[in-house]
Amino acid sequence: MGTLEAQPYDGGSGTVGAPVGRDAVADMKPGTAKLLVVSSAKGGGCKTTTARNLAVIAAHCKLRVATVDLDAQGTLSIWHRLRPPGAPRIEHRVSDIKGSAKPIQAVVKNGGFDLVVVDTPPGIENHAGDVRAIIKLADFVVIPSQPLNSDINSNVDWARSVRRDGTRFAFLLSRTFRNRTAFGEAKQRLIEAGPLCAFDIRDAASVNNSDKAGLGNYEIRGDAVGQDFLGAWSDVARQLGFVVEEV
Ligand SMILES: Nc1ncnc2c1ncn2[C@@H]1O[C@H](COP(=O)(O)OP(=O)(O)OP(=O)(O)O)[C@@H](O)[C@H]1O
Ligand SMILES: [Mg+2]
Image 1 (cartoon, rainbow, N blue to C red):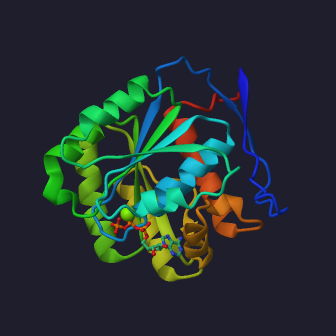
Image 2 (spheres, helix red, strand yellow):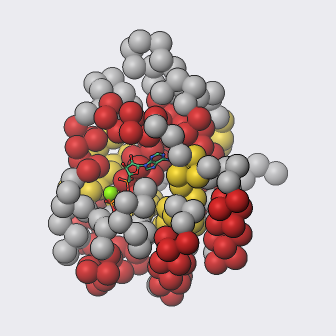
């Protein structure tokens, strides 16, 4: 049993971030990469932010990580180009969403990665067939959702469709203000509708800063959102089978 130890990147400048978490990780055989898809029914719903932050933490856990950008706007690709040299390596791929299931499958099977994280574009209803094909391939789907009524409605519908396709998923509440009533209400609605990640992601200006710097929030010293994503990752890693349950 190996160990999975997250070690914050110090940027070469002593900006060491979050405390180190220790988990046990399952032994991986070559060619058994896990496919994590981040998707939601709402544009601007924190998909790219989630994809890059989970990918960063996985890379700190010494997993071999690839990100795949299916969004023609290339938001994740722009972020990836800004990654500082020396930061834990994340490979990056770009694909048109049309016909993307096959190339994604090839990356998963033959890319030599432990984890492939796919970021999906807004307007999935315009690419229903392609999105379904990717969802069916996925080992796990994270559905970020802001605590807004219309986002929750759309994402609960979307989760039904993911469930119908037989893929496991969890909602991830994002851009939260924990002291607001809407937070509790959103939690309640999402937990009724399906699995909800035990950690939510707080709203913070540092998310924009990490985007501009090519970092994950985990890589910014003392960043609360980095802690939130670390908690979310622990949950997702277990769902993906990376973490061996300790009894
Ligand atoms: N926890 C957060 N706190 C503050 N701002 C956030 C947070 N999460 C995301 N944002 C901001 O919200 C905006 C939308 O986030 P993001 O790009 O991740 O959404 P998206 O679902 O990928 O959007 P699109 O559908 O356009 O691809 C971005 O400006 C991002 O920086
Ligand atoms: Mg995006």
